[in-house]
Amino acid sequence: MTTAGGALQAGRRAFLKWATAVGGFVSAMLAGVPALRAFLSPTFRHTRPEKWIQVGDTSAFDLDTPVKVDFVDTASDAWVETRRLRNVWVYTEDGENFTIYNGRCTHLGCNYFFDTEANVFRCPCHTGYFDVKTGAVLGGPPPRSLDVLEARVEDGMLYTRYEDFRLGVPEKKAV
Image 1: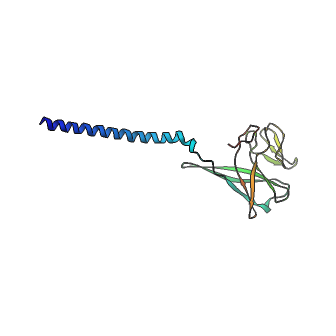
Image 2: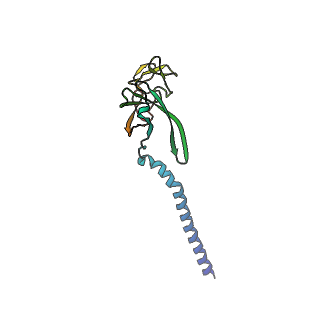
Image 3: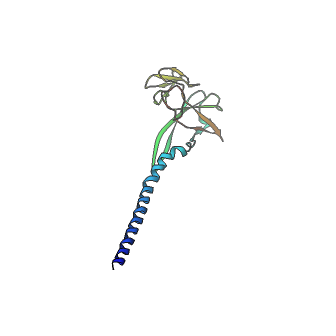
């Protein structure tokens, strides 16, 4: 009977060794694959998709007067959806060529407004002001001109490719 009991013990030991190895492998995969994916994800990261925002009908914009257009920007991160109110300023001299400015001051990202009396964009936070036609800095601490966004017209509708840029630096760099 000792041989039968010894064979049974050997069978149990082999099974436990096998079960331990399989359990260890499964545990390593469950912990290791997400960790490896997180480590390697920057290598395979795709560029962000372009965000073309419909700004409005081209005939709705006044000539030589900038118009502020607000819109909701939606960003999804896994299962969390974040919505932010964004804005752009649209300027046209002829109703055919449009200049669209990002609605954030290039200094610290404050929202600026159109000063009708002085005919400039004015940032209330640090007294920066910009030329309406070119977006150039006319005074104050902003390090560069207003950020001009790409625009296109399709079937009488104006669109812009919205993006944010790094603040407080002289070069225009996407965030």
